[in-house]
Amino acid sequence: MRLTRYDEVRAIASDILGVPAAFLNASSSPDTIESWDSVQHLNLVVALEEKFGLQLSPEEIEQMKTLGDTAKLIESKLQTSPR
Amino acid sequence: MAIVIQPYRQEHEAAVQEFNRGLRAASDPNLVFSQTAVPRWLPPANDNPVWNEFYVAVDGSQKDGSPKAAVTVRGAYALKQEVLFVRGKGLHHIACYHHPLSTGIVDRSFASVGALLARDALARQPLLYALGMGGMERPIAKMLKALGFSLTPIPFYFRVVHPARFLREVRALRTGAWRASLMDIAAASGAGWLAIKSAQAATSLRSRSPKASGKVIVEERAEFSDWADELWALVKETVSFATVRDANTLRLLYPPNFSSDIASTRTLRMSRNGSAIGWAIIGQRRKDAKFGAMRVGSIVDCWALPENASTVIRAATRALEKDGVDLIVSNQSHGAWCGALEKAGFLKGPSTFIFAASKELTKLLQPTQGNPASFHITRADGDGLPVNF
Image 1 (spheres, rainbow over the protein chains, first blue to last red):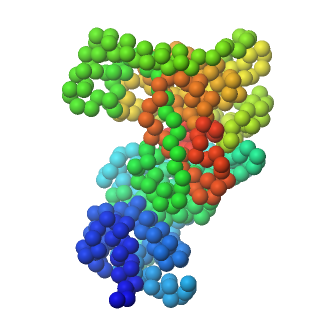
Image 2: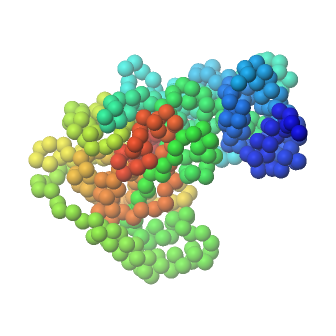
Image 3: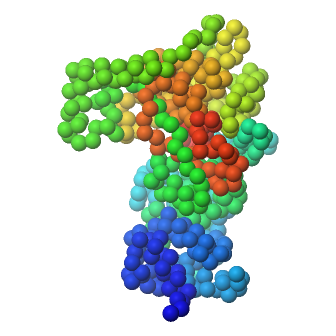
């Protein structure tokens, strides 16, 4: 089965935040996930950049308000600048 | 885009005060950023080799994305721009990343601000470091590690001058009523005095070395001049790297007329046979809950050839003891200074004073970056001793 971009992002977030993937959804955010603090936000940024081979700008980092936003952002980045 | 990081200007001062109020109310009252856009300590000026720059993360839009009438500050940080000497590689402009603060500390909706600040600083100066941070487990240290910084603890030393007072006051050791009572008994009976003095004497005996010939003169010097330049040039080749400590830089770092309500420093110059052999900056630390009511002296900074390090440390220790301090502390990386502290009866304690070097800086500092004994970092590096905000 092919994973969607959201599934991939959710798996990375699950690993970084130490939360089972089943407990994460598109609305998950620092407000709803206890371990999603500023340090883990940065870890998530770095992990996404490494996994997808891209660089997130300050504007894009700020757009990562929820897991759903993050997956959409990554998808859009990958479509405009394919690896 | 909602949040933009830009140089801190006078027009942001009211918003920074509001930002500080928010942090103070919801977390640590000591978390405040500079109330003034122009740094009190090390303001930028033409031709200065070291200066501070402040940046603020400004949020100009409301939650629905529409523009705000007035800006809100969501974060801030400082860069201390300075020059680093690296043996065999010359001088390099670097910056110290300090006082990063974010609304994310108190409002998780702004968890991204910490990342924005750190990455903005790295974009402005890839040769970046941070110092102190309170230990490897603190958020700032973890964040820098996530960004690929290499982290090295800088050794911490202390010498107890008045053991009875130390045992009564030192909060970090007095955890639990049982332990506190035991320390009260030790303080009252003299057992604690004996134990501490014995440990310090044993350290000192283990590290004795022959004395150099010639009488050492110690004097308080208001200003660094040519003699400090000569010492800088002579000593720098004995360290793998150090931030520049020539007379011009030292005059800026330790201005004779700088006044602060929470920190003060004195400069000691040591000479033998008429020639300067070293200098030390000593001072009394601001009140800190973990030290109770103790007067805590600090050997903040020092510079001398390795063979003269002991002379400098002994003179600085005597001067602080004469001031009546109860405890003397120092953070020193270089092996010669660590050895000198041990010779003067200092004990090594756990260090929360961390040197974090960015990937680019780590590359520049290879192969010695992970070996603190070869480089010269003290409590005076980084954001410096005076708490300038």
